[in-house]
Image (cartoon, rainbow, N blue to C red):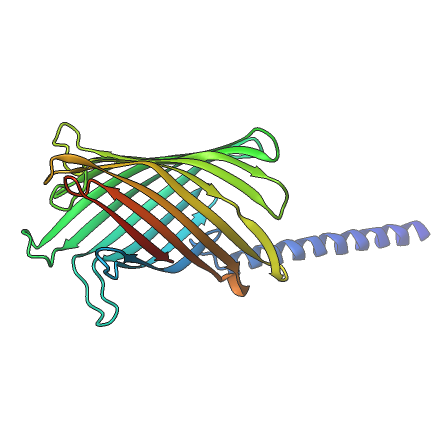
Amino acid sequence: MKKKLLLVAVFALLSLNLSAKETDKTEAVTEARNKVTSPWDGWHGTFGILQETENVEGSADKDGLYEPSVYFDLRKGKWSFGMTNYNENHDFEYKDWTRGNYLNRLELRGHYQFTDNDQYAIGLGAAVRNYQWAHKDGTSPTTTNNRWLNIQPDWRYNFTPNLSYEGWLGFYSMFNDAQENGYSDKELETESGLKYKFNDFISLRLNYYLDRGWNLGGPTANSFNNQQIRGYLPMNFAFFGDKTTTVTPYFRQGFINKSWNADANQANNEIDTRLGLRIDQKLPAGFAVSLEYAYEMRNQQDSAPGQKSFNKYITQV
């Protein structure tokens, strides 16, 4: 009789255990079915508004450029996609809010990160732009459109945990009305150099910059060659707890800047020196703000046969 009671008790315990497992399984299936999934799961985005002004002092003494833009980026895994709508207003007068020639530029871009580890990183980006120019200076045609294609690899290689070589190289091809808008058909732009991280507070970057434009099989009009040495000294501060403040003094020193002057049938030369300061501040709820101020001196030689000019530019972003 005792044996029979023991068997019944064991059977009852097994039944309860199996019943509990079946209940857990059923609840898990029900929860999975009720869970609402979205095609945006795993994506992270950034939305921003950028305002840039360039004021010039010197012989021309005009207000300069007024350049607002709106952009956003989406990232998931190794992929990122973005769009920027940029507006550039020339000869802008702040006193009466008027402008001269202007353009609207829409850019769509994508990037794939092949690898990114402690030793090296390799990525590849591509972009397409549409330039819509409005000419208010009486030139013909009064409106023009350009198409711009870009392929751009980027890289990083760590020699040591503190020393790395980083950079990018962009190749651009321009179509439609390039000559009318003062553009060259092809352009190669790159910036690369060494970065040394002293500690979590301060690091130093020294780069070489090249921007070269030419017309493939065409005239020399609008061709240019701009080369600079650039230095950056980013410093991280904790003024607001865990919301890092990055302060970056920087300089750009040009040593070659030649562009073809079709009217004078000669290559103009210009030496540029820029000193700037950029501040990046992280804010709560995913917000961030950046401020930049730069002072650039441009020594323009042979702007006309036998003439020279010196202009000072102030850039605010």
